[in-house]
Length: 448
DNA sequence: AATCAAATAT
DNA sequence: AATATTTGAT
Image (tube, rainbow, N blue to C red):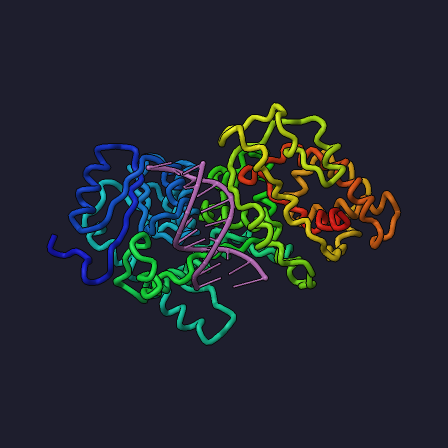
């Protein structure tokens, strides 16, 4: 068509969400005639799935539903999070619905059939947003505070903001969005940017288009959610892909989860809170060392052994999986890998000087001990209780009445007695739950 | 072909 | 230091 957008901005990617094939064909033709890149999906959930993979940079989403349902709005929320321009297209015009859509971040609520002019000039939304971002970026460059209020702030989450004041955990969604803005800024500044990461890594460096992709801030909260998901998935099935699904955090990608998981597995993650008390920990070479030690990669599911593990754990040194020929079964991976198995949780068992802060001690009543034991997972998910290790240690010390300095043996006993089930299926790294209560176990094993 | 986990880069 | 990206498996 005569008036496309080429030459004005680079490639505009449009996702069309529409279950009705006729509409889709028409729309695709129309969009393509104006040089948009079009991706079609049938449902909102499909779209969401695609978005969470985050593999493609999407500029616009046209949510074309016949009667907007919950999913459409869920998708909209995700779009907002990812800062994607969203259009609602509906068979009938409903003012209330329109209002709701706009309130939740849609750019337009339109009625079918779609006015061609809108399609024709759709790119202007994209450009406009880019310009705004650029402005915002300039504004925030001198202040190190990083001003967030660029672009249209669709305030879909007033709740979150309130929440963030209570707990000092910044809602991850917000965080995520901010970062995305930054990223987009970078992209904007290089219009010629092309998605060619596969071709040449150096090119990307030169391009400086994507210096840093959206950076998820792993708050204690988000981490807790991860841990919860892990439990939900079960010991054997903790693969990033599934985790992402279960967590259902808009915008969170598999890669990000994997990356975080990696950190957790090697017990190298500290929550922001914990980080603040930046205590030095002596034996920190362990990351590289443990990684070397475990250079034989094995994936696979956990053995589904439920008995007799706690005993071994209690010993703390002999790992259950080092015993061959149990009835261990692996959903993935060979069966001959027993010798190669290694225990991620325990790789990090280098001697640490106990660095766990016991600051939350007073918050936990001994009544809660049972609750925690009975329902550990819930407590993990509890924002205020992001440190199960602390909690448990605390309770134990309540019970034992021991001083916090010389309690390591007892702690070990206590912890494993009550949480042994958590470890009963220790197996290959891929499937293991990361150790969420790291420091405590460091303590536990420190005398080994 | 997908996606894991290690290794490396930012 | 924390997270993302790349690389090399499976």
